[in-house]
Image 1: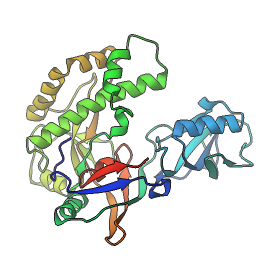
Image 2: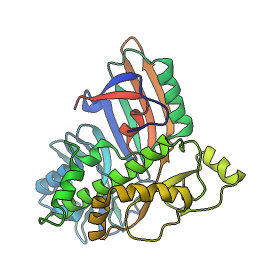
Image 3: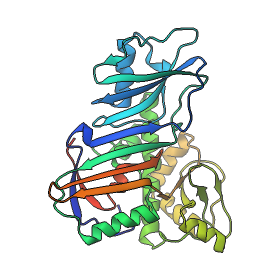
Length: 335
C-alpha cells in the first residue's frame, strides 16, 4: 500500500498479549430499557465475535440467529462490545453471566435489534512493544495522522489469513453453494480490493492533500454525502477535516462523482473487469466510503527505556486501527 506521509521508519510488535490491544464499542445512544431485544454489554478475550455468539448460544441453550451484533471484534484482544438477543416475552437468561472467554457486564432491554455498523465509534487503548527508537520522521508522521487524518484503507483482516480472499471470491462465487456469511465476506473483499486500489492511485497521483473538482464528500461523523463545486468555504471544511472526499464501493446505482475522480475509478474498474463482472452478477449496490479518516482524542506516550509506545484514540466504525498504525510503524503481529 502507498501511504501519504512516506514509508514508516520504526518497527513495533503488536498484540504481545491480549491486554496490549484493548477495544471498546461506543454505541452513541442508550438502550431504551424496554422492548423485545436484550442488549448485552460483553467483555471477551480469545474469541472472535462469531465464536462468542456460538459459545453464548450453546452455554444458554439459545439459537445463534437470535443474536445481533454491531461490529466484529478481534479474537486476539481484550474487547468490550454490544450484542442483542431477541427475547420476546421471556426473562433474561444470564443469571450466571460468565462463560469461558467472556462475561456479560450489563443487560438492558431495547426495542430494536442490533445491526452491523450501529455503534458510533471504537475506543482503543494500545501498547506496542520493542520499539528501539522513534526517529524524528516517525514523530512527524504521527503528528500528520493526528492533524490531517489517515488513508482509510481496508485492513489486512478484510482479505483473509492468507490474503487470498479476492482469489477465493473469484473462484467460488457462483460455482458452489456458500453460507450467507461466507458469500457476504467474499463479496466485501472484492469491493474492498477495488477501493484500496483507488485510494492508492489517488495518493500516488498526489491528490491526498486536496480535493478535486467532481469529488463526492461525506460529512464527518455521518454517512451523508454531497457533491458541490470547489470554493474557498469547501476547501476550508476539507482542511479542518469536517468533510472528506470519497471513493466508490463498486455496485449498481447512480453516482454523484464526475470529472477526474470518476475517470480514475473507471480506469481501475476496467483493469479489474473480472471483479466488477462478479459483483454485478451478485447485484452489489453502490456505496461511498471516505478516503481519509480523522482519529479523535488521539494521544500517545513513548517510554524509550522500555521500548513501549502507548496510544489512546477513537475511530469511527468501519475504519481500521492497524491501518492507522501502518502510517508510521512497520508492524509485527505477535498474535
